[in-house]
Length: 306
Ligand SMILES: Cc1ncc(COP(=O)(O)O)c(C=O)c1O
Image 1: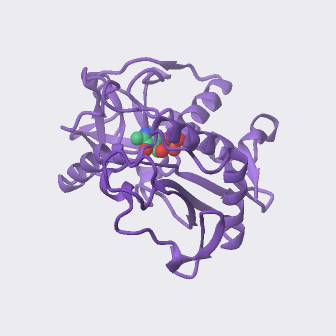
Image 2 (image 1 turned 90 degrees about the vertical axis):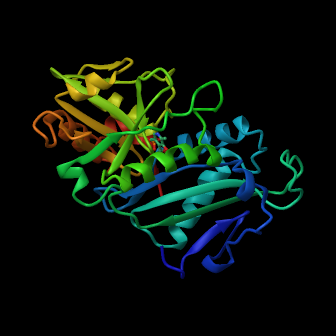
């Protein structure tokens, strides 16, 4: 992101340098905020479309509700604000980051009456896990950090403070030389990556942990499940164990930032042939054609044109 870009901040487009928050902002201290990660793509007819924008904004409002933050803007207002940012910065394809947070007021933990801010930034962002990740795959480790439990966290919400769980797992993995962490839940079942949902493939059947597990209900996960099912691939929502990861023919991540990224090794064990497998490649190509608007007959409702 460059400093000449505009950021939508509490209802207006402001200069990059003006999009600031005070040191005494409540969320900075205690981590109560909500955010989203969204992408816009250049479509094959030369336009730009944001992928599943209203659903992302609905999840943002849902996250605010979970966090007891009264979201200042509605889904349609947030959709319009996003389009404004993308247009103002003349971005053909970009990553979009909305954030709702508690600003000044009290610094007491409750922070009930603090001012609520909303901002949206957008910038050009390539492959999240590195340029080669999408074709060659990434090397992962199973984290010693347990994915936050459903009894102590709100696992379907993108609440900022909850992400220390992901950040610690990610940093730990990177410090050990891995690209990404895979977190297990409190019972030891495979949960997800630090910022991605996870899928395993064996004998042509695709499996991913169910919605009821301690996972974020990823919109990419949902898109890929729909796309693969429609193309005749069997997709199941089932709990997955660590041994099933090691025995898989293919493992891949899904996420707005990571898109569909193959996992080529877990804790030094090669997954399948140690390269992107055919079903992962199929999922990538189906997803790419959906975000580019090439599957209009089914997925036009997934695109909001800028
Ligand atoms: C922890 C976690 N899991 C999964 C995902 C994937 O969700 P989505 O596909 O909606 O981006 C994300 C990214 O938002 C995430 O942060």
